[in-house]
Amino acid sequence: QVQLVESGGGLVQAGGSLRLSCAASGRTFSMGWFRQAPGKEREFVAAISRSGGSTAYATSVQGRFTTSRDNAKNTVYLQMNSLKPEDSAVYYCAAGAMWGAVSSENQYDAWGQGTQVTVSS
Image (cartoon, rainbow, N blue to C red; front, side, top):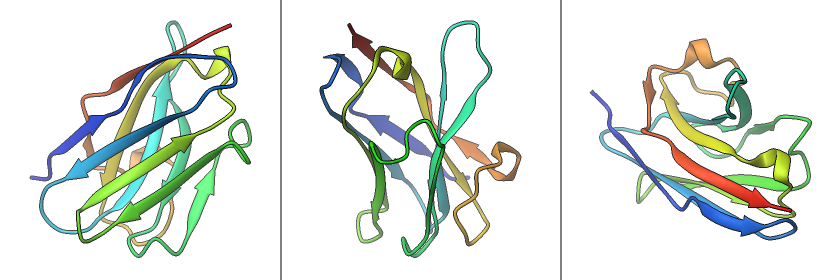
């Protein structure tokens, strides 16, 4: 069973940047990032294919967030720039057996523990 360990969350002012990391055990997976704010449903943020050659982003983060991966380290990253207060949420990484960059959370089999991101105004 794959295990995912996230790191990199924290408190940042609006306009600032954070980078989240997600280290996966075992083989290479297609990876996704999701977030959940208080009182809201979990939503898709970004995804990256197994090779890293394909990515997908939610409209709300397009142009501000970038996901990448280092398969030698089995680690995926989410670089978040120009952060806004509405980006505040618990961010989760997820792993799935598919090949592409997938936005549907139903396709993912394993989830990280989540890391809090808080953006102050």
